[in-house]
Image (cartoon, rainbow, N blue to C red; front, side):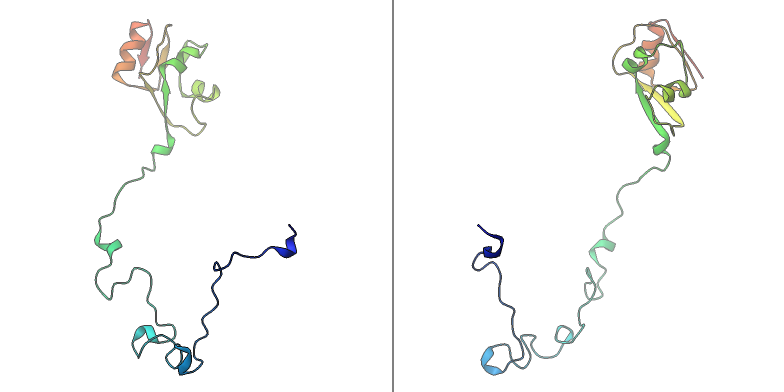
Length: 144
């Protein structure tokens, strides 16, 4: 096979319609556009979604969803990740320095996933009720 012998498959490329070439061509005079009206004119197409003045579908339907602007600065930490830290007092700076939460995190919450087998003190970090009971059962405590 050579690059100069490659051809498109037969029928995959239609010939261009030659309009306005007389009455014998089936596309003469009005060129297949019919008589008068908006679609017969040059540039006679309306915008996408236009329904002839009726309220368009994208405006009839209600808006859906919500994107929180503060959610970007919130992060979650699992109990099993806290267990892997080798510090006694855990705050947001410790979590950032150990790459457990992104550097721009302002709010962090500990969730009850995994287990914790040692005592840790949490400062300035949110805790779910299940995680709090697990941390206190392991001998740790949660400070506001």
